[in-house]
Length: 119
Image (cartoon, rainbow, N blue to C red; front, side, top):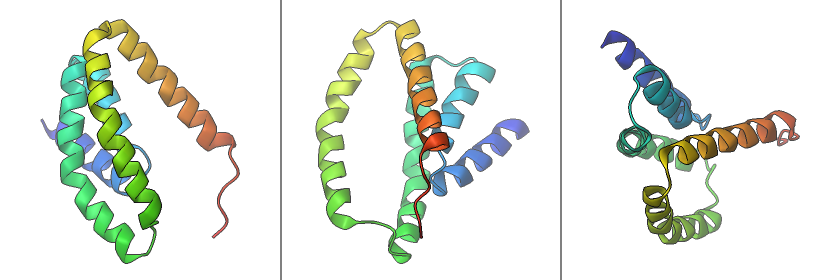
């Protein structure tokens, strides 16, 4: 229980910084806690609902959000989420795990090898 609270706090802090704490939480839940992928994803979504408002307020306060782009992202997310949810329900669990792993590798390499933004 103590380790779970610790992992939750650390991934929450990382999520607030935009580092991908949610991805780390899913990895923890599936690999260490042995939860099914669907359960881990559901927990991650609930967890995100708790962490995201605080991070959003901070990012808005520091003028780090481009509101026009955010509006388009919100619209795209609202349209794509139901379709992705249906697709995830139809795919076998091993495919979902492999797909998530490939996504993490692509994002990791992209972050590792992309030029950093100049401030």
